[in-house]
Image (cartoon, rainbow, N blue to C red; front, side, top):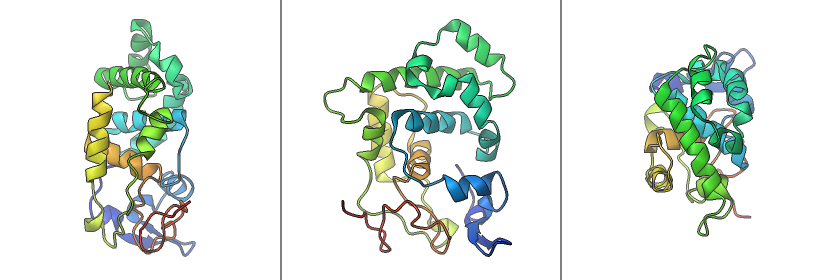
Length: 213
């Protein structure tokens, strides 16, 4: 989710809770209050978020969020086994589906990434498949931004994870969209200090260090 400093400026809603400006109104507010930054540790959940980040490239996250249920229907719940088996007829079907983002390269990338996700299950050096690979790059310290300017768009960990994903056959993955996935799934906490959601994942201490156990 590429955003400006103003997007991350805290605003207090009518409910008295502080949120960044980008989450001030629904559907973004509901997503921010209930989902963004909460731990996702299952394969399908991680694959869905990675796929949506692929489709978000060059677009607003709001656009993708409004189409999320349509994406889920079109990609059959983002079941990696199902999507990995997609062929030319499925690509044609998806390209004709006006309810999603019809981008040929992104559709092919999602299928390729599903195939890479399935292959990861058999990797001797990865525990827990795609979800395990993502969480293995969780840093010991998370950012503690107080302004939008302090919210990173990528980190050393996201760059390393993106490189690892590409080496394992994933495509359309770079340090920026991989970091967006990490933030969305709670692997890092980039809630602005002062937001009512700061620390909501339960994974980080008030000093920004990872909780033990």
